Image (cartoon, rainbow, N blue to C red):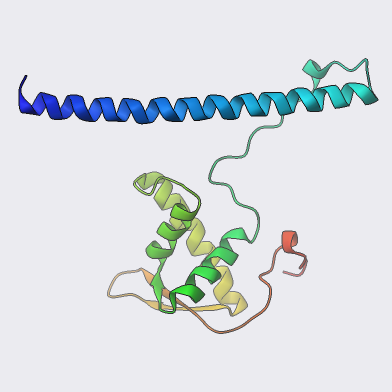
Length: 162
């Protein structure tokens, strides 16, 4: 065989091995979740033996890039404080994606997360936690912490005022 084919074959075999191990891990996780579901069903039947669980509405799973209210803002503040220097919106977006195990090379997802990151940073700026200035000649901003302390607003962390 040609060296090019050998390299391609090697890469394909390596990728197949990765996917196989991911599939096995997902199967194991599925087994754990199914067992937990069976336990919950049995517990429900203790309280109401004649219930038909098939008629219950199913709750849709949240998308993988969903976050709790204020979670991203707290992460952004923590990241900026730990960095000790100004960071651009795109650097912060990449940090958010890496921390949430999202694919950084997915341009559509990166654009969506960048938009959400920008909105979170704008909200933090309005609250006085961060300051921004233009980065280079483009439209991108770089962000710094202002030094204001206190909880970030949001109903999940106890502060109801907006």
